[in-house]
Amino acid sequence: MPRHHQKGSAAPGGGSQRQLRVAETVRHAVAEILAQGSAHDPDLEGHIITVPEVRMSPDLKLATIYVMPLGGRDTETVVAALERNKKFLRGELARRVNLKFAPDIRFRVDERFDEAERIEKLLRTPEVQRDLNSDSDET
Image (tube, helix red, strand yellow):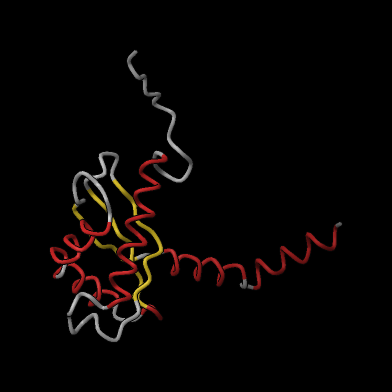
């Protein structure tokens, strides 16, 4: 009996259940590799790097890894160092994650922290506070 795949069966959050599960496994493995300091690079030493998200392509052959150094400093230097050590990190990832193919990896700076800060500043502006206070006075 053939399997029929439905087009609209993607899970909320941008991918199938398998993509999300593999992405989370890759995220944990990369975070562990970086926490152990396995990649010996002077630009990575002294940085604590957070891996908040990994997105997998539908065929699971490409992993986009979003990173943010603690404090948000030297982001471009850290991403460049991770790109330089991509081959080593991919090999370590292949040993830790049981997949048919080790995914190609690329690193991106996670912009969500900046976006959250921008929204927080926007919510603290006098105009927004005035509107919030006028809404609470009406009820």
